[in-house]
Length: 239
Ligand code: ADP
Ligand code: MG
Image (tube, rainbow, N blue to C red; front, top):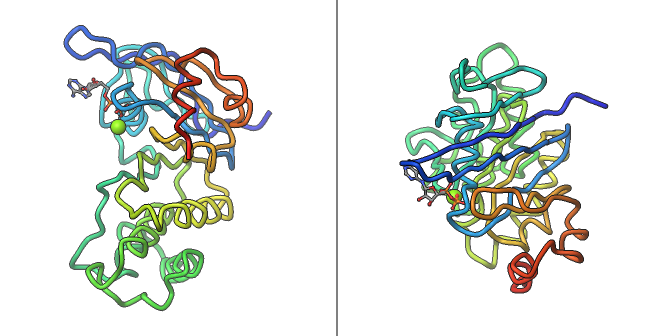
């Protein structure tokens, strides 16, 4: 079996005595998109924040590409984890061009090649020297994707990344994003509260409720055989 890109084992987080993440385990294999799907408030973002390293764990362990990054006792700082992040309110730097945004934080002689390659992949070559305010929401999203991919992250964490987009655009951007992620071979843990998004993008879904994973499997297996009446109801308003 290849080394998983991300292995989360039995993580726990409490706030003020309330357990908001309760014994969560997750696996993301190379090149795969795993979706953490569940209603608002069930603990998805807290889980992602622990993996990113911006929130501590009460219990459990997180291993990225075979490297233990956190087990409660020791903690690798977020900037040393080589984890890509895309959050819903993740803005581009307004004072930098598209190319400068993508190149931000990269080092070495190959930066220009990498930036051009990524801008071609996301279809933004014509906007290389534009500033963010000159772009539409969908175009900004594409640049944000290129920027997150630029350092070749070991795993990409995405927290409701499409929720700020118009309904009209969202499906197209989801499909484009998935194509770019697959082309780059990037493993992804995608958080969403929308079953339709998980069905569209996931290789594997982990269904979360009240801090716990209640079901996991391939999208159509979960859709066709929800674990209980609440899971069935959750999927029933899919569009
Ligand atoms: P989701 O992303 O699934 O909507 P969150 O992980 O953001 O859920 O939140 C899960 C629960 O934990 C919520 O009830 C939220 O209010 C609570 N919570 C999140 N962060 C904190 C915090 N820093 N302090 C106290 N409670 C928090
Ligand atoms: Mg959230």
